[in-house]
View (cartoon, rainbow, N blue to C red):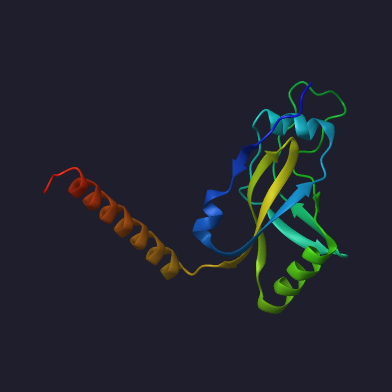
Length: 159
């Protein structure tokens, strides 16, 4: 069977972009069992409460929910187990230094298959205050209104 090409997004954490300022992003492989991969290929995963943590020089993904594979047997996986992320040593050291010194956190932004390999996009993030969230929403609404007016003007309407 030929290897699949491209990028197929399984789950994305849209709320993370609302709750956090994403300063930097990293792509990491995920160490998974067979039934986890099959469940992900079926498009089933949730990143709602998930977070990344560095311990003993390794990065782990906590609280990511991959439901049990429906066709699995006694070999099925626990849905919220801690999963190891695969990053290069230099990346781990750089992320660890930023997390320790400036109080940042690791937030998973999306889970996807890239050329057949399961990957997670991690964001190095700082939490937003409630007024920052309101400013972001107001800016997005203003940009949407500007795009609407420009679109009308381009079509020749002057409403």
